[in-house]
Image (cartoon, rainbow, N blue to C red; front, side, top):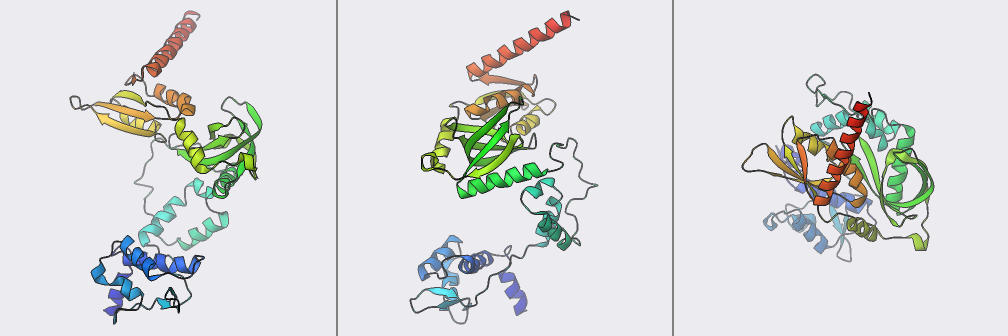
Length: 343
């Protein structure tokens, strides 16, 4: 019975003690600082919200007989170090193993793990049940673009994440959507974004050639290499983020949506990689207002997605965007009539 209670004490789903002790031991084992002060122990217990009446701090410092844990040993300076020089391995739940087995089927897992690691995990999980039965899950419109992750995408993804982590720049060539090749470009990667609609990755970076933030398709990069930034090229992440925020438009685009044929669902899907808000009309249960927040360098992309929503989505503000969409629709209408008349 005692063993059962001890086991329950360390179940993360049962209480917060497991998480605290896991963090404490592994931080001391893997960290550069191998000791922890009594104040830091008390702060950690407080951070996890464990009531003081449980005296967990005292138990960790072996001052709460007969409930001492003897995980830490007090040194002559009054700080504490690990009593046994060992870490605690992560013990995933069965449901976590099932989910891991499921996501290993996604080709994009190759962006994050080596092939050997993927195969090892698959072998370890071979006897686990599938969390989602293929017979019960039907995807009507699956994304086709990234059914396979090629070596170029994998290489670019990892090189860019390395540049972000190590505060380095990149030098590269880039093929635009119009198939224009831009050579010998330099930028400082800031963050990667993923669009669920296209199943594409984007990179937001600070262009050292244009001295401004840019957004680029990851698939457009060619011949990327890391570069050490010179003193005059070094820009703090905070300054890059500030320059990006300065490119955010002052007023969002507001779209009035008549939710016919799942227009609202399609709109939310189209703008899944944008900051957005939805309000509903209290007088009409099928009428919604979708606000799209975006950056100046994303304008053409936003307008393109609006056009794809059809007649049940109407831009109502700001006025200059509304006027631009009307103008483009008139151009398309005239082209259609001219082409029809020439048949």
